[in-house]
Length: 192
Image 1 (cartoon, rainbow, N blue to C red):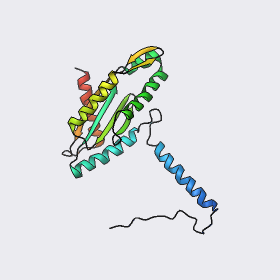
Image 2: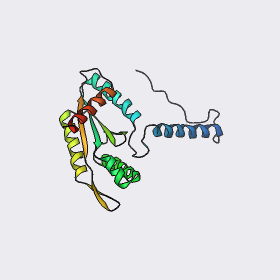
Image 3: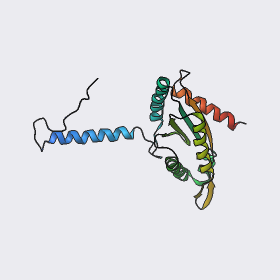
Image 4: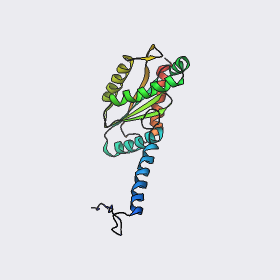
């Protein structure tokens, strides 16, 4: 069994006012903050596309090793271009920010909420079977459609197209391939 390596958080010369040690602590904190910034979408506060791919790859690997499924919910806001055209891009941005808060309020703490891009979002549901993922997506869809936002005094009802799938580890595929399958599923339903 490997022993954990710990680093002593003191100056090697035992100087309580060591300027080098103070600067080192500050740099470590800044590095941690920069790492967080590279994973977070600035507009919504959700994880970004880079984080999505890395985390989904990790969860898919866990599924291959443990046979515990990983589900994915893909969400595409309907008629978002019309919202931007009618109310302006800043109003569209406020809706995207609202969506980030909505998703955080209506998902589990273990779920990973990501902005895929534009008005598309992905939620990684670790350890979740397809039926439970579909129920979660339906709760989100229903909650979203029952919410009325005001844009410049005009009521706006949001709707979205949802795609749900579960990775069971039986097929060797990448996170990108898994996401593309769900996007194609959504597109095929939108064309019906």
